[in-house]
Image (tube, rainbow, N blue to C red; front, side):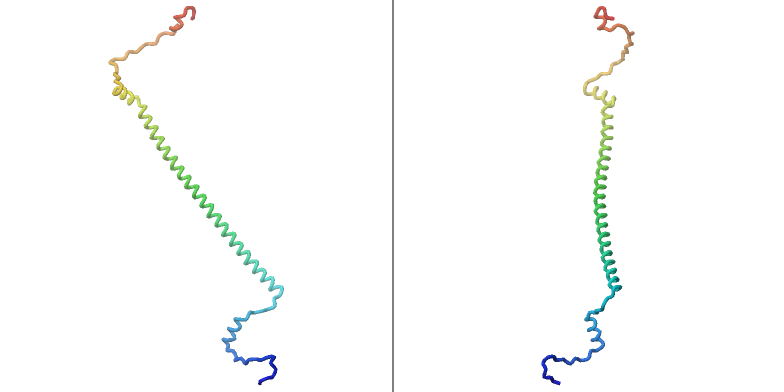
Length: 147
C-alpha cells in the first residue's frame, strides 16, 4: 500500500515475544497520577530518610568526639604515669640520701675519722668537774659595787 502522501510512513513491526514485552516494559518509566495521600506518604518517607541520615551523621560526630576525648585522656594518663614514676624515683633517692646522711653523721664514724686522720688520742682516764654553787660571776667580781 503505497500512499502518495508523504506525511506519515509507518513501519511494519514484528510482534514482540513475551520476553521482549517484559524487557521493553522494564525500560519504560511507570507514570501515574499521584493523589494527596500518595504525596504525603512520599513526603513522610523522604523526611524519614533525611532524619535517618541526620541521626547517622550526629552519631558519627559523637563517636568522633568520644574518640578524640579518649585520646586526650590517654595522653594525660601517660603524663600522670610518668610523673608518678618520677615521684617514686625521687622518693627512693631521698630515702637513700637520708640513710647516707645518717651513716655520715654517725658518732662512731666521726670518732674513727678523727683518730685516723687527725691523730685524736683517747685519754687514759676522764676527769669530771663538779658544778659550782651559783654566785657572782667572774665579770661581776672584777667590777666593784656590782652585785
